Length: 210
Image (tube, rainbow, N blue to C red):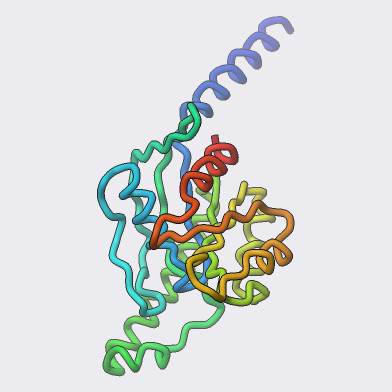
Protein backbone atom coordinates (compact mmCIF):
# COMPACT_ATOMS: atom_id res chain seq x y z
CA UNK A 1 0.00 0.00 0.00
CA UNK A 2 2.81 2.36 1.01
CA UNK A 3 4.86 1.35 -2.03
CA UNK A 4 1.88 1.95 -4.32
CA UNK A 5 1.36 5.41 -2.83
CA UNK A 6 5.08 6.18 -3.16
CA UNK A 7 5.10 5.04 -6.81
CA UNK A 8 2.12 7.30 -7.61
CA UNK A 9 3.85 10.21 -5.88
CA UNK A 10 7.08 9.68 -7.85
CA UNK A 11 5.18 9.30 -11.13
CA UNK A 12 3.21 12.47 -10.45
CA UNK A 13 6.37 14.36 -9.51
CA UNK A 14 8.27 13.39 -12.66
CA UNK A 15 5.24 13.96 -14.88
CA UNK A 16 4.84 17.49 -13.51
CA UNK A 17 8.59 18.06 -13.87
CA UNK A 18 8.63 17.07 -17.52
CA UNK A 19 5.40 18.96 -18.15
CA UNK A 20 7.05 22.14 -16.94
CA UNK A 21 10.05 21.56 -19.19
CA UNK A 22 7.91 20.78 -22.22
CA UNK A 23 8.25 23.29 -25.05
CA UNK A 24 5.08 25.34 -25.39
CA UNK A 25 3.40 25.09 -28.79
CA UNK A 26 1.89 28.47 -29.60
CA UNK A 27 -0.53 28.49 -32.54
CA UNK A 28 -1.65 31.42 -34.69
CA UNK A 29 -5.22 30.87 -35.91
CA UNK A 30 -7.85 32.96 -37.65
CA UNK A 31 -9.60 33.65 -40.95
CA UNK A 32 -7.60 34.43 -44.13
CA UNK A 33 -5.94 37.85 -44.40
CA UNK A 34 -6.32 38.70 -40.71
CA UNK A 35 -2.56 39.14 -40.43
CA UNK A 36 -1.36 35.82 -38.97
CA UNK A 37 1.84 35.64 -40.99
CA UNK A 38 2.47 39.37 -40.51
CA UNK A 39 2.23 38.80 -36.74
CA UNK A 40 4.42 35.69 -36.99
CA UNK A 41 7.02 37.76 -38.84
CA UNK A 42 6.76 40.57 -36.26
CA UNK A 43 7.38 38.11 -33.39
CA UNK A 44 10.28 36.43 -35.23
CA UNK A 45 11.84 39.78 -36.19
CA UNK A 46 11.51 41.12 -32.64
CA UNK A 47 13.13 38.10 -30.99
CA UNK A 48 15.11 36.24 -33.68
CA UNK A 49 15.91 38.96 -36.21
CA UNK A 50 14.39 37.01 -39.11
CA UNK A 51 11.05 36.46 -40.85
CA UNK A 52 8.74 33.48 -40.43
CA UNK A 53 7.35 33.46 -43.98
CA UNK A 54 6.15 35.50 -46.93
CA UNK A 55 3.13 37.80 -46.66
CA UNK A 56 0.59 38.23 -49.48
CA UNK A 57 -2.74 39.95 -50.10
CA UNK A 58 -4.03 36.78 -51.77
CA UNK A 59 -6.31 34.83 -49.41
CA UNK A 60 -5.01 31.38 -48.39
CA UNK A 61 -1.44 32.23 -49.39
CA UNK A 62 -0.30 30.20 -46.38
CA UNK A 63 -1.45 26.71 -47.32
CA UNK A 64 0.83 24.65 -45.12
CA UNK A 65 1.67 24.70 -41.43
CA UNK A 66 4.82 26.74 -40.78
CA UNK A 67 6.84 26.28 -37.59
CA UNK A 68 9.59 28.39 -36.07
CA UNK A 69 11.29 26.76 -33.09
CA UNK A 70 13.10 28.11 -30.05
CA UNK A 71 11.58 31.57 -29.67
CA UNK A 72 12.01 33.26 -26.29
CA UNK A 73 10.10 36.45 -25.53
CA UNK A 74 10.69 38.56 -22.42
CA UNK A 75 8.66 41.15 -20.53
CA UNK A 76 9.08 42.68 -17.07
CA UNK A 77 11.52 40.05 -15.80
CA UNK A 78 9.49 37.10 -17.10
CA UNK A 79 10.04 35.04 -20.21
CA UNK A 80 8.31 32.45 -22.38
CA UNK A 81 10.02 29.89 -24.58
CA UNK A 82 7.90 28.37 -27.34
CA UNK A 83 7.62 26.95 -30.83
CA UNK A 84 5.51 29.23 -33.03
CA UNK A 85 3.03 27.54 -35.37
CA UNK A 86 1.57 29.67 -38.18
CA UNK A 87 -1.51 27.98 -39.66
CA UNK A 88 -3.45 28.49 -42.90
CA UNK A 89 -6.47 30.77 -42.72
CA UNK A 90 -9.60 28.93 -41.60
CA UNK A 91 -12.54 29.06 -44.02
CA UNK A 92 -15.82 27.12 -44.14
CA UNK A 93 -15.73 27.08 -47.93
CA UNK A 94 -12.92 27.57 -50.45
CA UNK A 95 -13.88 28.18 -54.08
CA UNK A 96 -11.26 28.14 -56.83
CA UNK A 97 -12.98 31.16 -58.37
CA UNK A 98 -11.58 33.24 -55.50
CA UNK A 99 -8.15 32.86 -57.09
CA UNK A 100 -9.02 33.49 -60.75
CA UNK A 101 -8.14 37.18 -60.65
CA UNK A 102 -4.61 36.23 -59.58
CA UNK A 103 -3.92 33.13 -61.72
CA UNK A 104 -5.18 30.82 -64.49
CA UNK A 105 -7.99 28.30 -63.89
CA UNK A 106 -5.77 25.22 -63.58
CA UNK A 107 -3.53 26.90 -61.00
CA UNK A 108 -6.58 28.28 -59.18
CA UNK A 109 -8.13 24.81 -58.82
CA UNK A 110 -4.83 23.44 -57.52
CA UNK A 111 -4.55 26.36 -55.10
CA UNK A 112 -8.08 25.77 -53.79
CA UNK A 113 -7.31 22.09 -53.22
CA UNK A 114 -4.11 22.93 -51.31
CA UNK A 115 -5.92 25.59 -49.27
CA UNK A 116 -8.69 23.12 -48.32
CA UNK A 117 -6.08 20.61 -47.13
CA UNK A 118 -4.39 23.41 -45.18
CA UNK A 119 -7.62 24.19 -43.31
CA UNK A 120 -8.07 20.52 -42.40
CA UNK A 121 -4.47 20.31 -41.18
CA UNK A 122 -4.89 23.49 -39.12
CA UNK A 123 -7.90 22.03 -37.29
CA UNK A 124 -6.03 18.75 -36.68
CA UNK A 125 -3.10 20.66 -35.20
CA UNK A 126 -5.36 22.20 -32.56
CA UNK A 127 -4.96 19.02 -30.52
CA UNK A 128 -1.22 19.77 -30.21
CA UNK A 129 -1.56 23.41 -29.15
CA UNK A 130 -0.85 24.61 -25.62
CA UNK A 131 -1.93 28.20 -26.28
CA UNK A 132 -3.57 29.89 -29.27
CA UNK A 133 -3.52 33.46 -30.55
CA UNK A 134 -6.56 34.20 -32.69
CA UNK A 135 -5.63 36.93 -35.17
CA UNK A 136 -8.62 38.97 -36.34
CA UNK A 137 -8.81 41.96 -38.67
CA UNK A 138 -10.23 44.63 -36.34
CA UNK A 139 -11.77 46.52 -39.28
CA UNK A 140 -14.12 43.62 -40.07
CA UNK A 141 -17.24 42.22 -38.42
CA UNK A 142 -16.12 39.51 -35.93
CA UNK A 143 -19.55 37.82 -35.93
CA UNK A 144 -18.77 35.31 -38.71
CA UNK A 145 -19.32 31.59 -39.03
CA UNK A 146 -15.57 31.07 -39.36
CA UNK A 147 -14.70 32.94 -36.16
CA UNK A 148 -17.45 31.21 -34.19
CA UNK A 149 -16.22 27.83 -35.52
CA UNK A 150 -12.64 28.58 -34.43
CA UNK A 151 -13.75 29.76 -30.97
CA UNK A 152 -15.99 26.71 -30.57
CA UNK A 153 -13.13 24.33 -31.39
CA UNK A 154 -10.85 26.04 -28.89
CA UNK A 155 -13.45 26.10 -26.11
CA UNK A 156 -14.16 22.41 -26.65
CA UNK A 157 -10.46 21.67 -26.13
CA UNK A 158 -10.12 24.11 -23.20
CA UNK A 159 -7.08 25.78 -24.80
CA UNK A 160 -5.95 29.17 -23.41
CA UNK A 161 -6.67 31.92 -25.96
CA UNK A 162 -5.51 35.48 -26.58
CA UNK A 163 -7.26 37.44 -29.32
CA UNK A 164 -5.04 39.79 -31.31
CA UNK A 165 -7.27 42.49 -32.80
CA UNK A 166 -4.95 43.38 -35.65
CA UNK A 167 -4.73 46.46 -37.93
CA UNK A 168 -5.46 49.07 -35.25
CA UNK A 169 -3.52 51.50 -37.45
CA UNK A 170 -6.54 51.63 -39.80
CA UNK A 171 -9.43 54.09 -39.24
CA UNK A 172 -12.14 51.42 -39.41
CA UNK A 173 -10.57 49.45 -36.56
CA UNK A 174 -13.13 48.61 -33.85
CA UNK A 175 -11.72 46.62 -30.94
CA UNK A 176 -14.85 47.04 -28.82
CA UNK A 177 -16.84 45.04 -31.37
CA UNK A 178 -14.44 42.10 -31.01
CA UNK A 179 -14.54 42.38 -27.20
CA UNK A 180 -18.36 42.29 -27.32
CA UNK A 181 -18.33 39.27 -29.65
CA UNK A 182 -15.96 37.19 -27.51
CA UNK A 183 -16.11 38.53 -23.93
CA UNK A 184 -14.67 35.29 -22.53
CA UNK A 185 -11.22 36.14 -23.91
CA UNK A 186 -8.70 38.94 -23.50
CA UNK A 187 -8.52 41.11 -26.63
CA UNK A 188 -5.30 42.99 -27.43
CA UNK A 189 -5.38 45.70 -30.09
CA UNK A 190 -2.17 45.60 -32.15
CA UNK A 191 -0.71 46.48 -35.51
CA UNK A 192 1.50 43.56 -36.53
CA UNK A 193 2.62 45.58 -39.55
CA UNK A 194 3.85 48.64 -37.64
CA UNK A 195 4.48 47.12 -34.20
CA UNK A 196 1.81 49.09 -32.30
CA UNK A 197 1.19 47.81 -28.72
CA UNK A 198 3.51 44.82 -29.12
CA UNK A 199 5.13 45.29 -25.68
CA UNK A 200 1.70 45.02 -24.02
CA UNK A 201 0.90 42.06 -26.28
CA UNK A 202 4.03 40.17 -25.19
CA UNK A 203 3.32 40.90 -21.53
CA UNK A 204 -0.20 39.52 -21.86
CA UNK A 205 1.02 36.47 -23.78
CA UNK A 206 3.58 35.56 -21.12
CA UNK A 207 0.90 35.97 -18.45
CA UNK A 208 -1.45 33.62 -20.34
CA UNK A 209 0.96 30.92 -21.52
CA UNK A 210 3.78 31.09 -18.98
